[in-house]
Image 1 (cartoon, rainbow, N blue to C red):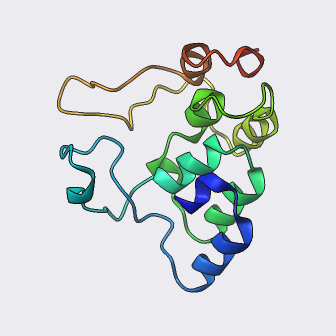
Image 2 (image 1 turned 180 degrees about the vertical axis):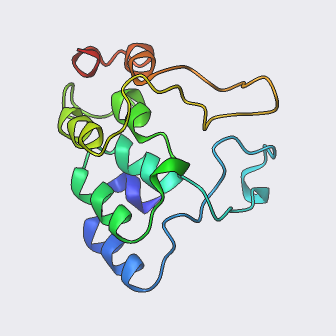
Image 3 (image 1 turned 120 degrees about the vertical axis):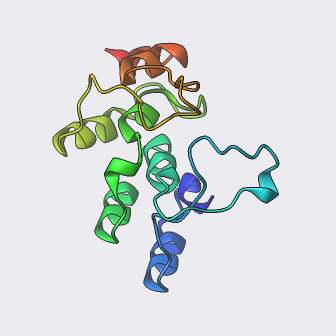
Length: 138
């Protein structure tokens, strides 16, 4: 996914050509074979990838092109998903997301599989701890 690579010029190009930032895979697809997963119109995957890549600019760009924040769990992704960024580097994005009104105590209820909620891990703090992101947890 191009959003996760922080390629802002290419993301701008795709959006200028009419790319839908809400089109993407479901958070927990029922299908396990990747090429069989059908995109959905209310996916939060682009916003989640932007949150995990620690750039408020790309996140804001997606929002300005109609990405729906309620489809995603970006504060959870910013707090902890992915080990390949320097410690503390996501804090500016986390502050940006809180400034947008996202709740630091929100449960990842967008992540559901079936009736029992498999796939849920809790709050952004849980994600930070689970991924060993101590600076983000503070």
